[in-house]
Length: 227
Image (cartoon, rainbow, N blue to C red; front, side, top):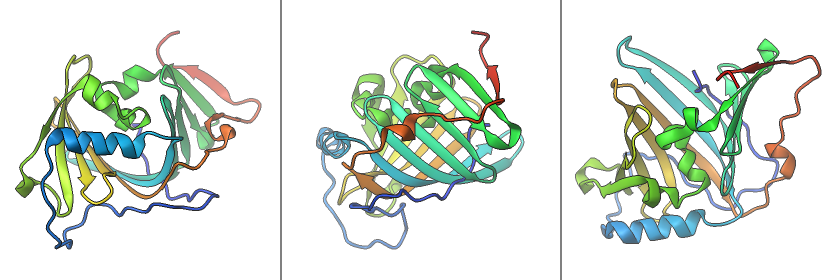
């Protein structure tokens, strides 16, 4: 399973913090049209990249099992993402949009595969590395305000060209800063993955070596897709 838990903090300072969706926000804000919301989200995410902490819950409906994970996310447009997990076990998931690397230090192995198979159709919140993909790849609708977390818009994303098993992705977008605080993915089998993001840092250069995978000599390299 690609989801586990991490709570690292970047070495550089944070400029913009946005808490995860809560239920105690009381200040009413005007419901903007969908296109205006998307414009403001694109403005927020168009830049050098961002980092954030994350908390993830993955539920297998058929088995009624929920796994939790936390960590830190680093993103550089248009295609670089690094997910660092600390709990329940250390691992690094790195992608350049085409190739996926999963490093599991405790198992002394790196698994290599095609990124679309694991991040296609919105899996793994891949559109956060190129926010314009939301309009390009999804039919987007604005959910009723009553269904959204207080202080947030709720957007529903349905893949325009379905290649994998994603049924829909829901975004919680803060009304004050237009930050995506939560991404909830539903597949055709009733499984869900909810990623809650917080402690954002925008528009600060992320060191190049963050997107390198420096594994120890002797690490097993395993191809996941027979390439």
